Image 1 (tube, one colour):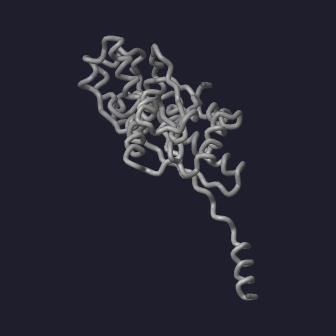
Image 2: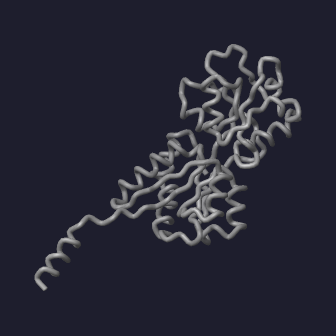
Image 3: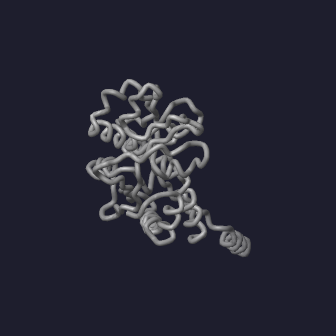
Length: 246
């Protein structure tokens, strides 16, 4: 009995295993959500946030196929709407937490940088990076803007399709394309490596929603994380990375 009592004391003295929370977020949230996760872990000792970044459409596919995710944050309302329609979200947990702007960036040192969508059809622009419109929100925003400007047919043949917005940004930074469609926050993530040519006008704002995934084994913790994202501290971190207020 004495030996058993000693063993129980030893087990009780062991540090508690950190509660892991899995958060899947759009690629454009990479830096901001890393900072938010660090701040959240500091505010809630014993909790570890595992981050998974990819295009919003890819994240939705992963969750639909059973990936063990607790929180989903997308770069558009359409993808989150599909998640809701598929019964993948926990009731009343969805919140809008940020906005963004669509911009065109070019490699540094370019003297004839385009200043309008029409200029992308000029002789000086041969390759334009754009996220795959079928799975990447920034690609859908870009295609819609070009279609509304009557420029999609003129530019479609010049587009280089990417898997996510960060790949588009990398292509521009390495000079592999002449221009690329990214978010304003992505431009801020690579100061000096790309040049912001112009902002792209959109009829509808770019908004970012976040939600707890239905069936999460850590739904209470997941809701607390969502609350942190929309809290003043979380919002300050997002503002620092170039995102707008919801």
